[in-house]
Image 1 (cartoon, rainbow, N blue to C red):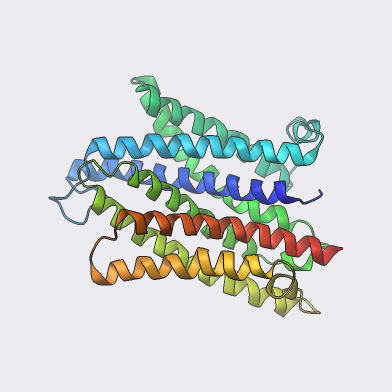
Image 2 (image 1 turned 60 degrees about the vertical axis):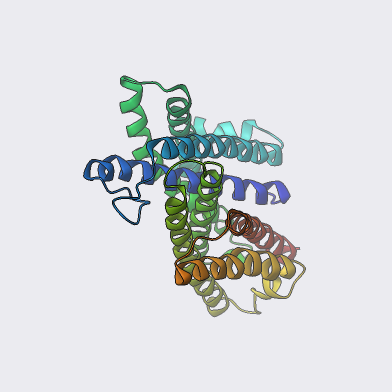
Length: 305
């Protein structure tokens, strides 16, 4: 497979869509249990429970965005392949390869997203409510496969040393969850007029900070593993090569350092940031996730030339 800017964009859109759906579906499933006990998963106190209107509005936005992001990512993949029939062959002739498993996971996740999206926006009841519940559970599992698959897609190209680390799929997993959480935060900002929105946003910021810290551990482990098991410093293509500015300024600066500082300051001060600061942090996380994919694809392609 030839890797291009479209592949990097697909890796970002597919991973972020899966991450956003997984985070939102997990919160919805938790809320169905927690609300029966009068404690919402995004609430700090019993008396400050985000309203059902807030949760419903956020869910509708996140499920819509994640569904269309995944479809757009798939279009980028098909456009890069040049021959769409090559994608269909993966379903006509399935194998035990991770490429085949990932393709089926993408297709099934699209179906789960479509079911939940229709339920959320059309206010369907009865059978659809149960179907949406099953789709959320199945979608969380499939989202995890898709997030890991976006990293494995690079690792399967054994001719590129900078992609040869089992920590690469783990890095993509935590990056996708962080980007997905940023999408949920953005939806929360658009729902700020509902009761309990500030508490929910504070909890989401703490969750995103946790994902960013895990992402930091993963990038460090990835860097150590690549340079430990490979020769001639394969990571140089990422750290000091043509894609270095994307990695340092885009990923490390925008995706890790800046949003983590913003989140930690808010937690230490125990005060809510202004909505503009929260929006900036969420935007920086998404920029960082996009920069990471472009930097890794660019470093791999330049090293292989």
